[in-house]
Length: 275
Image (tube, rainbow, N blue to C red; front, side, top):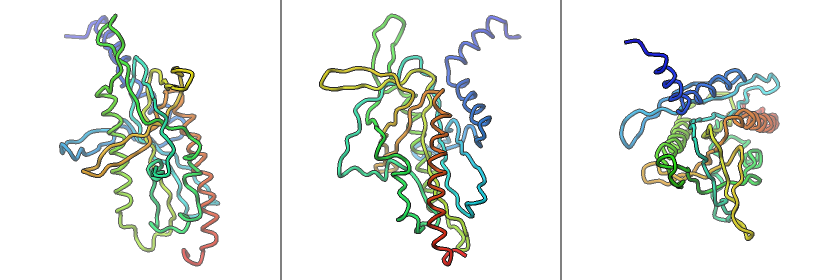
């Protein structure tokens, strides 16, 4: 039987509440901004042997004739959630001498021993030393209308964060293990950045001597811990409001442009090794 107008209205309302329309808007806005976008990219779940999908992977490419055989780019690994109630980021990640800052920026290079690695400060270029990061998160839910709000780790939220983390680790590891031809002339500095785009609010918890308060924010970097087999891993995933995704991505691209110029400066002093 044909779908009735009332059923169509219900379907539209259902889609609006879900993340599907949000994902479609992200694909469209990134494509219109000049990004190469691949929706629904498969990821093999090594625990179950089944295939899962991340919502989209995007990257921005522009040709600069002044940067010969230099490739610096970020792969944005994006999941989308249309949360009706806020996601809260809390507990500022403490600075510590034992903190492994390598975990805060996932990147790989070619060649693996590229000379620029000791001459270009990737962590400075990516703002590792200036950005506030959070080590805890929760979703706010309520079982039904009128019930009290509850703070928890909703399964869909955790699943999205884990998919991002595992996809990044899989892609970066495959890049690092790839057998590049010895004659390959390119110097590459490739980054993988996880982004969870939310349709609703993001709040951060300010817990100071004066008491606790919640602050609405367009973006909150989350330090997310997971395991690959028995090996613990850490990745920083950006919690981002929908409207903040393009401004954030453009800032990352500007960082990449600056780093590309620095890599090119190093290369100019090593011409005898790469020609």
